[in-house]
Image (cartoon, rainbow, N blue to C red; front, side, top):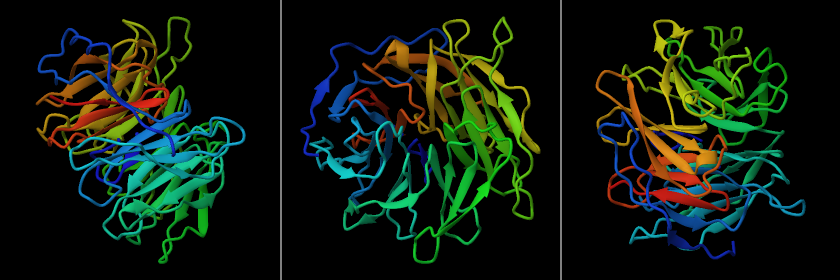
Length: 393
């Protein structure tokens, strides 16, 4: 999940939501996790659907409190996807979610992005699905019914690509292309341009990112899929150059290791956006790798950091309040979420793990933001048919 403010990310009615304390306790800090942040045992909000795919943290009710937004896939062929809003109450608790039906069909694998799309100072939501992108504008303290921007979508990012001051929709599509839906003055998306080429050789885009990746103040495109990330830099004339590939490492047989997640953000402390990807496997093969941005672009060779087993989805955010971004990693097969803190020298420290029952392997499985009202960023994770809240102590 991408967000407009860089803090929340971030992440995958009529049904009663339950809030319960996890039966287990947080897993202990791992070796090398000096200064690890402490989190309370996970609490859970039931979504009522095993198709819970994405989560984001943002104030979508206009009361100044950050809410939890959940993207839910259609559970059966007779249903549609939906957006669930768990509104943070005055006492910082959560009741039953508001369910907003969307247009995606069965097995849509939805993703979320949150930002002020129409420029009214309020946070809106975009959700990608098999039907396209549903845009939900915030109106009167709630999200309005979705407006569909048609065309199958695997992921969506929000950024002003056209340079007119209005955020556009950047959509990763099933056949490997990226569509840029320009926002009009009336906040519709009537036209789009397609960026084709060897992004992922016709494969779907698991994730799409928009960021300045070479320091020229122009927004570049990055598209993640399985074994690597394809980056195309924007030229001065507005076109995009050829794709450069940033791959996962090879195993002992020469096969590329699988990656289940990527993130873009400054994790080296120099103010430039870096590319971070997870590497699947068990210890000692599990890792996260950082392609740090230097002068002119991303490093060809990544810095590798050991990770807890089966590293999957990622989110970048400042958990400590030191103005340095940290890294949060989901571990789907090991029921855990880990945290790597960024140190003063711009490197990531060792990991500390926290137990989360049912944590998902979706790329948008994580978000960061204060969802408990104490001023400290918390971690929110997709957890099968619920979302988990890890409250920072």
